[in-house]
Length: 250
Image 1 (tube, one colour):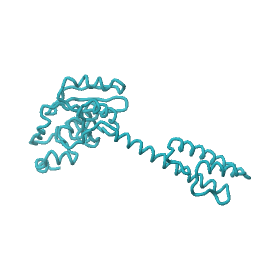
Image 2 (spheres, rainbow, N blue to C red):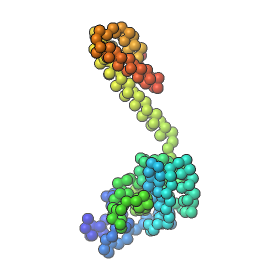
Image 3 (cartoon, one colour):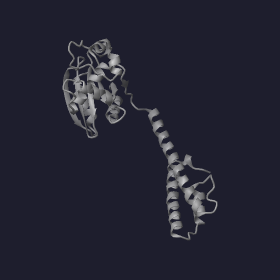
Image 4 (spheres, one colour):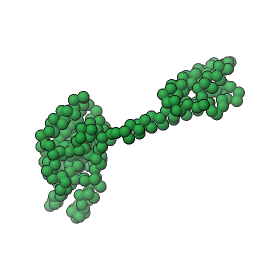
């Protein structure tokens, strides 16, 4: 990107393009304006991992105020909020708040904290364009997350999960079970077709499959193997039916 294009672009377009201007070393580049809604607000960027997280607090100008590394356990939320209590006017920016950062982001949102989701791609670009050439460390990553939040007013706010989330999870589980049942029935149909003349009826159920298998008298080792596999699939079908009664066929 040339210098004139950089000067002509706005913070919003830079954000949309994934280009963070906060620490870019460009000659005579004018400072980027901080949105008025952010002035006086402390932003705490969080770089989450499976076993730990690193938090970095910055002021409205992007200057670091402190950092903390915490292990992920039952006390992480209380330790994090106790550390952040030094800044009553605060918000949290979590990298991948709907992915790896979901646990801590949801805990913070449920506790009434303001939480923003920072896509990993934006945080990575901010780190690459920062002074230091993108050298990677957990603290640098967390600082990049905070800088993205400072200069991207269109970041998605994280809401605490509610009944809608529960319904979605239950619907996904039901769909998974229905798909698994269909796969099992297709396998059963294929095996019964090879074991019995005419195969099985289209509206196959666990009870019907069990009745058909009782009629099978394998004459070869291959037929015996098919019957054993069909019995195992029948057990799988009963397990799926027990987990989701609504998937049963009549």
